[in-house]
Length: 497
Image 1: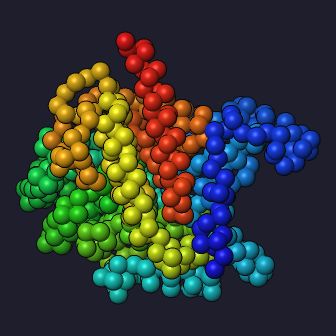
Image 2: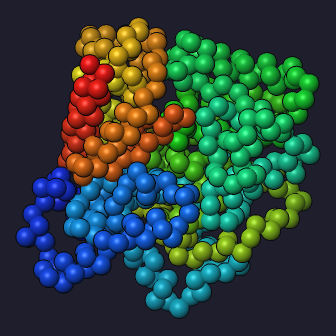
Image 3: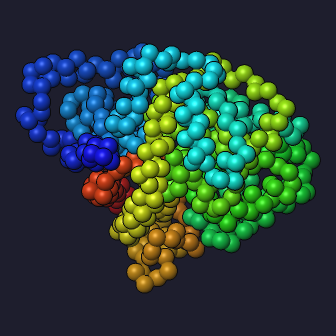
């Protein structure tokens, strides 16, 4: 297998040094390239004039990408960036990976239909075969695959309908900071807090523990709270048709669910006949260091929601559920866009590549190294309240540095139990600093690094690099983030000093 197919030589050999310092004279294309750039200059202006205000990334990342490979994105001005957004986690193998492009070209050249509703095709058969091969064994042996509309919210909505039909109940259990898609119906679990069909329970975390203790004790209290709600329902809280959770709450601020807590949720739901839905939209296909994040805990869910990376960079959403839940139920129509052949081919290639090249294991090793470096870096920046993550899903929470509470933000003693890769607990959280996080994001962009923000206050810098990122690229990402933190924190100190 050549270097490009191994994920090396994917554009990462150019480290994408700071865009303002690029060698413009050495760029290919000459006058023709310059004319092309001139024609692209009005693209952001026209977007602002023509599109609605419902633009998110375009405002925070004012670039016009025209080429991309692996971790590297090039804009219309020839500037290169290291992309740690990865299509909001969609690009497991980075941009335009050779095996994905080959799979797409094969379908295009075959003359096969590009779109069918839910008919059987060789492309779909290959996708389902590979998917079943990768699933947790406890679910794979009894799994049924349901294709939905192309968005993650379509799969979540299908999961809700499935468990409601199977149980005859309407209520759902979800958790604080959850994000399950963006449709109106799915907002039951991640939107309107007054929706009577949803009961929201505390999600365990260390830095902002809802019980003020963090660590294993905080997770135990969260599990106990869940049991108390289910065993003594208050008036108006419906008996749940299912429970939905994320193994890592990505947009909620990169909050990994403790393995023991997840096992408790499996036990609690199984004992009460409540289907457990695990949303792997953000965490699946190797990102957290396992093919599916739920595998870290050893728990086997009844339903898995899959999207984003499952389509190999193209729109695809899939529901996998235990056969007993769908017994005697015909699949309800889920729209015409359930047969995207290109996405299935790209998804098959991506799943097979991640599995065969053990990229999940590599994500675990490299992610642990990056977390260690970032936690060491946090000692130099009082504005860093917490560093957390799993595999190549990493979050850096930024806080107001002028608050001096507990041990948060102070350098960690290298000999202390909190100096390694484990999350630091027992700290008093400080006020979120979304303005500082936005400044860090802008400073990163100026240094050729694309990052996203998350958390309820948008104060968590999120790193979602592709699984093909090299060690050298990872070092460059951390170096640029450190410089951006220094620049943004320095300006913040100047304003408050």
